[in-house]
Image (cartoon, rainbow, N blue to C red; front, side, top):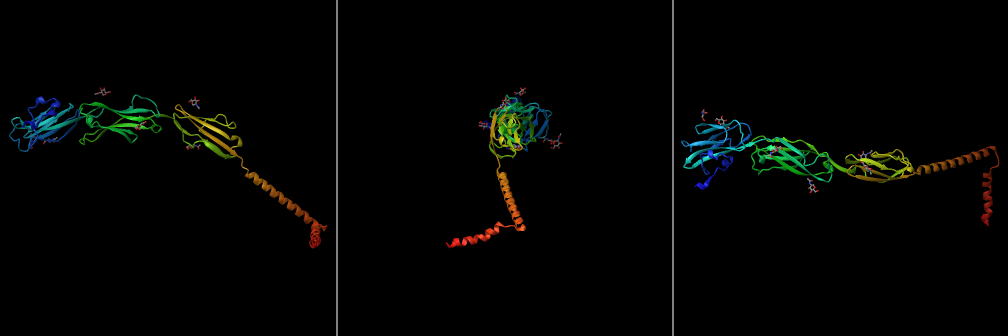
Length: 367
Ligand SMILES: *[C@@H]1O[C@H](CO)[C@@H](O)[C@H](O)[C@H]1NC(C)=O
Ligand SMILES: *[C@@H]1O[C@H](CO)[C@@H](O)[C@H](O)[C@H]1NC(C)=O
Ligand SMILES: *[C@@H]1O[C@H](CO)[C@@H](O)[C@H](O)[C@H]1NC(C)=O
Ligand SMILES: *[C@@H]1O[C@H](CO)[C@@H](O)[C@H](O)[C@H]1NC(C)=O
Ligand SMILES: *[C@@H]1O[C@H](CO)[C@@H](O)[C@H](O)[C@H]1NC(C)=O
Ligand SMILES: *[C@@H]1O[C@H](CO)[C@@H](O)[C@H](O)[C@H]1NC(C)=O
């Protein structure tokens, strides 16, 4: 018979087994004491209460009791009204029982979950201050201080609004306030530059209490990375005299890169802007343009080969126009000349030719 009794291990943990007048509880008791509420979730240092209805009928006239490590109770018939002004132990429970026979009891235990919000939730980079270097690995930590119980804590690490990782030590048995640290690998990339990180510690008390979040500080990552061209990459640039020239060497980088140009001799010798421009190119602007985009992490170099062509079309058109003009002028002059001759009745070379030609040609044809 005794083998089916469970020992009050829960109560012995709390260190007040000695106070109990009970030996063991009958697991198969049909009419067990009923606690209301059936579970107690209490913030450390606050008051709480519970009732135990010892039985429906089995216990009438039998010895009953309420064992408690804290608080006090009143009895009204078969109901115990237990109250505690201030819960100030981290492990508590109450036992309600009645005697069924020799060494045999019907009992119920009300566990009391004592919780405490963290005093501090902190996010940061482990062993690191200041800017990080692209390509290196760092550790992002979230530290939660003096929270209880740990198994009810869910720590979530965020990058902006994106969840990076979550930690829930659900098998932790510590009831007292403890510190915990959650680590997440941080790969420093250009994309992470300027990203904001925060951590939220949630005490998930299984819906007995509204979920309670404690939010950390926010850290902003600064990642140094070498310059990267954002405009079109260099290469050949083909222009015609008079065209505008724009060479775009815009680049991203942290720290902000500086730009240095190596220009053909015709261009200004000292230029540091991101975009090199000439309003109207001439043939002497042709050549190789090199921009070096430079920061403390690295250098990017872009080369442009500028070709400047002369446009011959207007020259050809002008020449054609001149020829046409000349021809027209000649015709006009000839006409004017002929007209003047006909008016003055002078001998006309054209008429002579017209008369003479068939006359001379006929005998030739007969030959
Ligand atoms: C316990 O019982 C008393 C009286 O019946 C009632 O006023 C009180 O609200 C009950 N407490 C709990 C925690 O159920
Ligand atoms: C005891 O409980 C009964 C009914 O449950 C109630 O009428 C009575 O007022 C209670 N007595 C005390 C002292 O609380
Ligand atoms: C938790 O951290 C605080 C502050 O760093 C420290 O004072 C305390 O001793 C730590 N507690 C435990 C249980 O390690
Ligand atoms: C970080 O980089 C390593 C390899 O460089 C990769 O295995 C790991 O998945 C990366 N972690 C994250 C969080 O991006
Ligand atoms: C240079 O290129 C970048 C990226 O394409 C662009 O945002 C910027 O407006 C350009 N600058 C000029 C002056 O064209
Ligand atoms: C890059 O910048 C450093 C200083 O920031 C300077 O000393 C160096 O000459 C620069 N290199 C080029 C190629 O412009």
